[in-house]
Image (cartoon, rainbow, N blue to C red; front, side, top):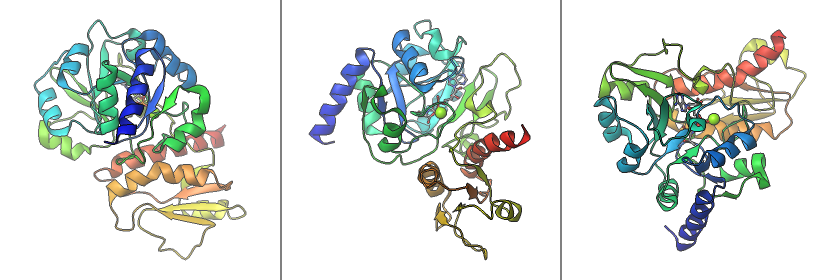
Length: 325
Ligand code: TXA
Ligand code: MG
């Protein structure tokens, strides 16, 4: 790591320790970080994001000691998961210890924890010497940022610092698992596909059955939306928006007879991980072009495609709901 980057991280860590806000890169999306053990600092995150306070935050940690300082381990499956997938795009929701402020967990007894696979993030946590609470660094309900510029655009001077780590390699948020003694439950699909998780720990429940759990963004009706109306690429939608400028997003390419104002391909080789890495930045890009709408081709629902379609459907839901009203 370059000396200048190291210096920036040191400076950022000082801000975190003093209760300020620092946006930082992770392999999934940029996070908006604060000292996770300082409730006043954490409250600032909700303030600048306009986020409802009931929505809990993930604590980012850099090693197992720090993990043990914030939560209890209810099952050996936790160790199997950590061994295989950390550092990486997997968040585990585990019983919190008393030092974790209620504002981090939305008042619930569990805390989400993850070890990001990004050197700047890991170094920042180590230098700050505290778990860093961070949601994705976007305004509530807006697109997640996969580049420092996306954060700058949404928050600008409202936060103390942005650490620029270039483009996020995974580009889609972490998979979230609730781990309990008897059961592991998927709360949000994300950067680690369900198939890979099942290979390591076996059965995973797909839908939370209990009602005493906080909502994961997985359960919110809509989220991650561009400002331009987004719909699935179908003949009906092409017809419906024919008098407007259409931006089209294809998985591998445009095989149709239709041509659009702007066309973007997520992965020419049909790689789901490349498509995931490009999805949010593509939506950001098209959102800048004053288009009448964005039409997106469905992604095959296997592996990472499940998480991708989840995000796409949530982004679309906002506009489908408007139409009903
Ligand atoms: O990849 C990621 O997870 C990124 C990077 C920055 O780490 N973070 C992220 O944070 O996506 P956020 O806040 O935008 O989404 C985290 C989701 C929230 O919807 C929240 O409801 C859920 O995780 N969550 C966090 N703690 C939880 C808990 N204790 N119980 C249930 N859900 C929780
Ligand atoms: Mg988010």
